[in-house]
Length: 81
Image (cartoon, rainbow, N blue to C red; front, side, top):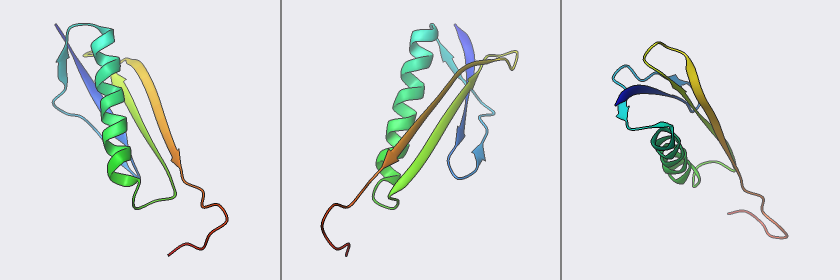
């Protein structure tokens, strides 16, 4: 298994100094998506628009995956409380 590093950008850059061992790129992709949706779920109640990015690098530091989730909330025909 190879080690991959999942750097998170969420209002600031949060490097991954430990990394995660993954069987293959399919697992890398799944972890990145779980990370994005987990963070978005936590942030959704606090922001009407929020973007989170996960940049994954291999052990040599080369980027292998860059994925971003943008969550937008728009109030329609009602007053916000």
